[in-house]
Image 1 (cartoon, protein in one colour):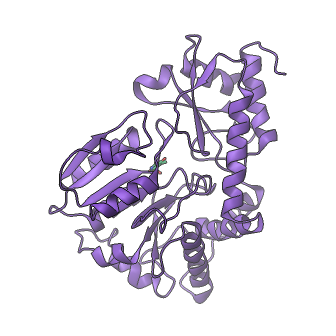
Image 2 (cartoon, protein in one colour):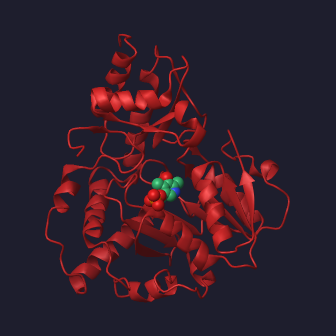
Length: 358
Ligand SMILES: *Cc1c(COP(=O)(O)O)cnc(C)c1O
């Protein structure tokens, strides 16, 4: 449908030909040692990318990212907890909804225009047992200072749960440095794979805290025991796991995770600096490499710009949700995008505004 479009949406993102090709092969049978090796390779690759502490394990769920968020809440929190949930937009609000759905006592910590590096001052007073955050609040394009959050969580003896879905591969995340106990990842953002695979990295401390859940499919203990033989309890997203294994190798071949982060940073900075001369400003101060949020300064509707870019230039960007759809639009730098690819979007914006690009 969008074969000939230029893709700058924050998930699904532009995929490489190598990964697309794997999607076209016959899905293999998976209850065998060959596929167990794929699972082990994926687990080790993920552990390396987030620098998980020794003894960490990865759970592979055939589901979208929200299932990762919900199952982590279900398996790690109960009604004796009081979760401090950072809510800086749609995904933070989703964590609050999940806690409420599962009757987990929580404090809705609403934030705006901050990366929380001074969380000590900003956090509400109270006794909290867990800190729950989306490292990159994708709805607004704000990246939090997870190391400051980790220091705060450690000082207050809180479990540190991080949804890193929209910043892994493009932005740095280090479980050990930032004292993170749980990381949630998903296939369709920086990993640049099809949607459908969600991964949860559990530190030994998190594994110790796993509880008995009222759920068959989302019982992490069951995933851990099957994981020992490189399997999942139920049919995994076999093809996406083959693609993940190849993607992890691709990241290695290209110079490792630090190189992937550096190249996302380079593209993001190139894009932002190329906008000079256009009536558009950067919306937030604390942007990740993964994404740029933009606000038109000439009163033009952001939604009209998004629609026009798609219709007339075959360039896909994304409006903000809710009331902000008229004022803010978002451009992803995740996936198989380089400066030349990004030039197509920059040229389209200059053409749209009838300003010549120098
Ligand atoms: C995309 C995203 C998710 C996952 O959303 P799904 O639609 O369930 O895959 C979760 N958290 C953040 C921060 C995201 O950007």
